[in-house]
Image 1 (cartoon, rainbow, N blue to C red):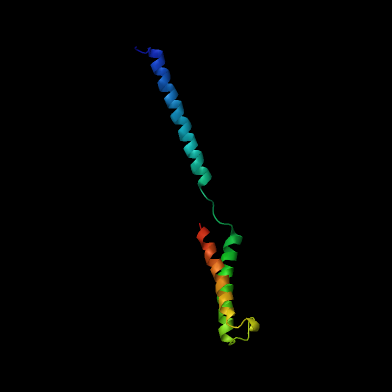
Image 2: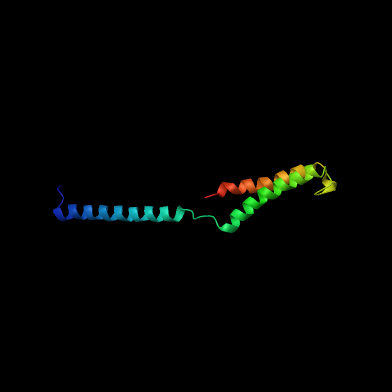
Length: 95
């Protein structure tokens, strides 16, 4: 059975409206997913942890195990490396 002209144009209008709504949803999703820049405190902590870990290991070697924690012994290297690793892990969120 043939369709009337009004029914055919109504279909086009509905498709156009549906396409417009889809376009608006896509734009909204793109805006929501766009991450902003990192705050300054995050960067300071990230670089600070990397530097503190490095200094920890250097102090351990320069003092021949007397500092930073004499009772930890060789574990001072692991402690320094762990502190630095936390800073390096924070770089995964770098923007």
